[in-house]
Image (cartoon, rainbow, N blue to C red):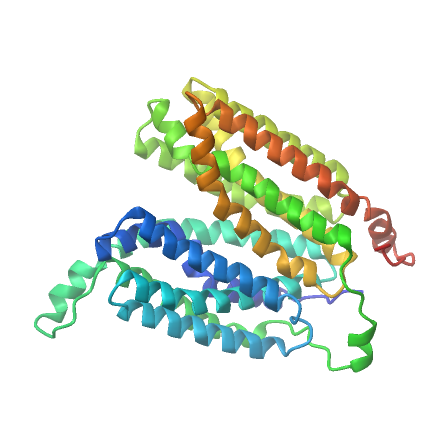
Length: 406
C-alpha cells in the first residue's frame, strides 16, 4: 500500500517542486533575457538553455534511482541550496560561457529535486490524484510566471537608477534571477512539510523490485510523444500569425490553454484513479490527434481558437494516468521519478526537427502529419504497460496484486 499524504504534505511537496523549478518554467524568458543582456545571438542563448535542460535530464535520471534510499529532506535542502547559489552566481556571470558553466550544476540540482519529488509522489496511495494536483499546479505556476517574468525583464532600469554610482550595473537577466532566488528561498519554508519516503531498512531495500523493460519503453514512448507534440507546438504562435491574428489575441488563446492545463490534469487524475487507464488514455490521445490536425490544417481563426488550447494542454492530462500506472508497476518510484528526463529530452529535440520539417513544406500541415505520427506511434509503445492495469485494478479493489512480469 502507498502512503496517505495529508493535504499539507501534498501542498508542501508541490510547492517545493514548483518553487525550486522556477528557472526551468521560465526557460523561454531566460533565452530572451540572455540574448538581450549579453548582446548575443539567439543560437548562443539557446545553447545555454539546451545545456541547462540537458543537465536537468541528467540529474533526473541519476537521482531517480536514489530517491527512496537517501533522506528526502536532505536531498531537498542540498538541492535547493545549490539552486540558490547557481542562480546567484548566474547574476555575476560576465559572459555567455561563464553563464553556461553556472547553469550546468544548477540544472543537475534541479533534476535532483524534480526526481525526488516525483518519486515521492509515486509512493502515494492515490498516485493519479497526486500527479493530477502536481501537474495542475504546474499550469498555475506557468500562468504566474507568464505574468511576472515579462515585468522582471525591465526591473534593471529601476535597479540601475536606484544604484546610482555604486559601480554595479544590472541587466535584463538579473530581474529574472531575482525572481528565481525569491522562489528558492520560499521553497525552504515547505521542506519540513514534505513527506519522507526514505527507508532505512536493508531488508526493504533489498526486496524492492527494479523497474521492468516495458516500463522504460513506456518512458521512451512518452518522450517520443512529447517530441512529436513539440514539432508543431513550438510554432503555435507562428501558426496564429499566419492566420492573421494579433499578438494580443494569440496571448488570450494561450491563457485559455493555461486554464485547460490547470483543469485537465485534475480531471484526468480523478478519472484515472477510478477506472482502468486504457479508455481515458485513448480518449485523450484521440482528442490530441484531432486537435493537432485542426491546428495544422485550418485556414480560419475559429478552429484555431478551439483546437490550439486543447493541443497545447492535453499532454499534461496524459501524465497523471500514465504515472499512476508506472507507480504501481514500479513501487520504488524510479520510473515516475525519471519521467521528466524523457519529457525534457523530447522537448529539447523538437524545435530543430520541427523547423526542418516546416522548411520541407509550404505550410504547417506537414508538421501536423509528423506530430500525429509521433504521438500515435508513442501511444502504441505505451500499450504494454497500460495493460498492466489488470493488476492495478485488483490493487484498487483490495485483492492481492501480483508482481509484474519483467
